[in-house]
Image (cartoon, rainbow, N blue to C red; front, side, top):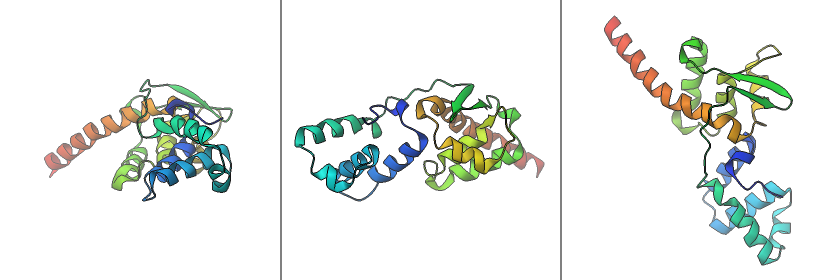
Length: 172
């Protein structure tokens, strides 16, 4: 069984699917690669599927490029049995978190760095924060659970960047 909507895939699955569908391959090759990835089959096994099964799986993948996205902000999320709390106020971010968010999101690398971005805005509740460890755990987060806060930060960072530029210019 493969995921059938944006909310049910993990961050890692989203990153991999995005990479597959952004490739220069033909659409049918993208679909074969995506189905192989999500079903843990080889591309040869997917190519050997009967056409009705292939069409079914291909139809299930439509959410990848046209997702129905849940922008509800979850203050708390469970990932791999660990509880994380989202930072809902930009004022509570450290300067380091702000810099990390800004750097990780630039140059169009936001999808590739999604797990690292999430590790900046979700803090562990019952273990010591370690960005690398949290980033690895966030690969397993469900997109439906974490996308809302990420969407919030994308919008808020634009506002914050403008404010910081204005303050910097006034200081000069």
